[in-house]
Image 1 (spheres, helix red, strand yellow):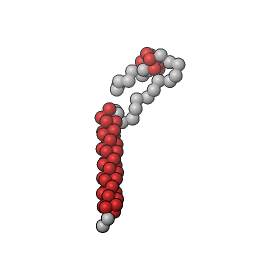
Image 2 (image 1 turned 120 degrees about the horizontal axis):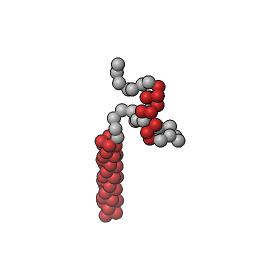
Image 3 (image 1 turned 90 degrees about the vertical axis):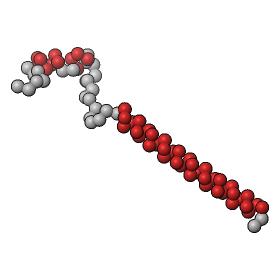
Image 4 (image 1 turned 135 degrees about the horizontal axis):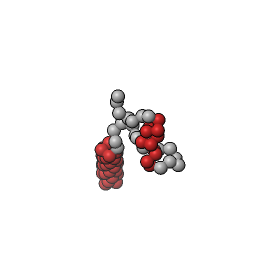
Length: 75
């Protein structure tokens, strides 16, 4: 083998190793992002948002429920 062939083979191996390393780092980063989202995202469906243009007190339903006769407690 000539010196240029050995150098070419060596550079090819180095590039392959760099690609493998980059792919592994991307995979690890994706896993860490998913784990972080799983930790900080609440389980189940998100709580319902209040309708636009209403205050927080009436959006909680306490005033509306009392007016309609619903207390939210089992009979």
